[in-house]
Length: 357
Image 1 (cartoon, rainbow, N blue to C red):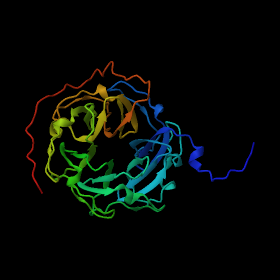
Image 2 (tube, rainbow, N blue to C red):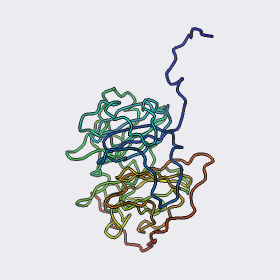
Image 3 (cartoon, one colour):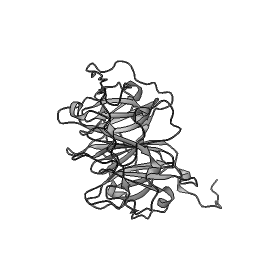
Image 4 (cartoon, helix red, strand yellow):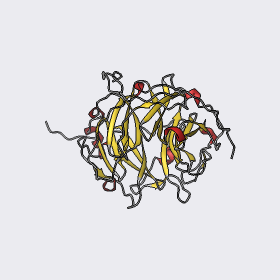
């Protein structure tokens, strides 16, 4: 029967809740697809094509969220925009997707550099921790971003030449780990960076050496289980997991400690937090994606080389690594590692002395 309805119908009530992977390219094409599209493969494999891209474009990020979640989009210019998951069009695996300019009012030379899911703004104290390429961190209460205009609002004021690259949702007691391309990392408590207003600049997270830049940021909560590890992947596709305890607490704005011997093993592409039971989605500069079991990546010291996790062709490099939860009932792919597995190096180097700003 067709009947009158007393209350208004929310469009979300008509949309199925579904976990999806949201893929964003370097030139700003975005799409949504079920996470089951990427089946797990063996570590060290070649992977499958994630999408069809123009020659100079590449897929740079994959983000998992429900269709009912709010997704905050942070641009390299320090602005933040908001969309619901279902507002992003669903397409096939190899489709290019829709340009973000058709969904958000970004300027011509503005790029979306980070996107995070916010299931519910709620009433509990939550914070957004932002880190820039030049090592600036800013922590602001989540409620400050509750009411975002369609045209977006300022998330952080940036220094000239700097850009916003990472954003994480924290609970006020997390530790923050910041890692650089030349193989250094620093871990400190988020309260070392006091909460400040929405339009403020922020403070220094790590004192970068000349020519270095930040390539990864992790938020480590106090209730992290023993199965949590820090994953480091080089641009050449070499990766390893290391225990969190190997990254000791330091004071914010120090030089940090050695995380990866980049002069011997190559520059670092990404650093992120992974758990046993996660899968890893790695994306190369040629738009190739591979999904592997995180437990197939060896656990070794933070100065070790690691093993091959993704083969890269000539002129190709790893540009993004994203951990995703494994589908229920899906078997991990641990058997039959790559025949060209890299030898694990276990030599240690002395920590670089932590220097205060």
